[in-house]
Length: 379
Image (cartoon, rainbow, N blue to C red; front, side, top):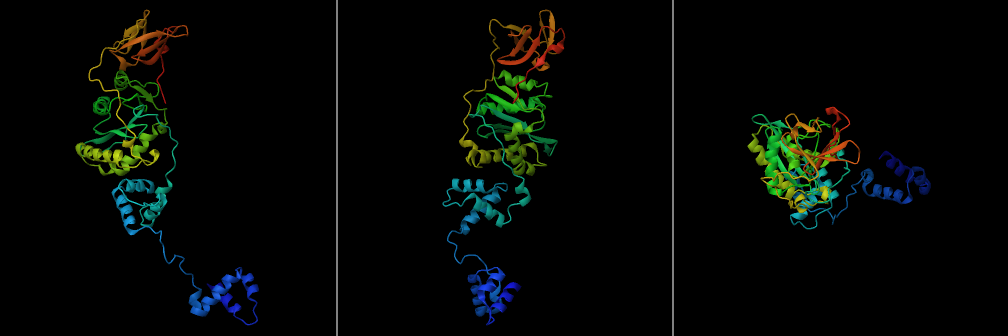
């Protein structure tokens, strides 16, 4: 402001060279004439900065559209511009603005925390080729309930991100998971594979992946995959689902009884599957990409049948099997089950199969139980 006053004072002198003064002040002659004209009309007040907002804004977002954006945001406090835009289009709104415009509307109304926004980063994704080719399963961190604690069990289809199961469990025991999985299998059928981590109840550590629960899943014809040890990103879709679950529903269930938690979980699961646009799916909903499995859950399983050339053994108490007058140790989870021994191309090495799953190697050259080498399938 002071420079403009000085410029006008010098430029109005009769002996002044306007072009030279403009050059010295680093402005064009057009700008110089503009400041002189404003001063003549308004005095010093004319040298103040003026709003650059256009007199008319034909492309300005309508108030009704802004209200609709804020209404969706109020209902879904964690949704950003892309999800809100997709939801408004689904609801039938015409001329929905771009996601960036919606983001600016949210920012203008104080709906976006800059620090929280800076945390979001793009994910490197892999994806199963079809629904039910791979499910991801894990427990979300437990929280306090009215009596005890609530342990949310989540089951997610890898291809469609469809939330197949969201159960408020009282604990993380294998029998609890099995009972909940039966409900999921009865409704949606069986997957080809299930991806889990290395913790209880699907494994005690990286070298001991077999439990009663995983053996039961294998008996159902499901291949159980374990994530790499200390690599939770392998279960990235379920981990990301957990973050959304906590932000949108779980934190509001703290202190409720399990029945109340389950009711909220079910309502939110319906919204997640059928309403909430998913960015990894091109803003489609998980339900639009999911279909039930063609493999139905069998309430009663037929006895296991192996090939005529297999040498079949029943796993005894303590996980022991006998072969050629020697005793070998298998995981105790297979106690009471029948396994098949098959020779390999390597001399003295036998493969151990449970149903169609290769679970172990036996080294016949070593006379101790340490000769057993675990070969779990990992992702």
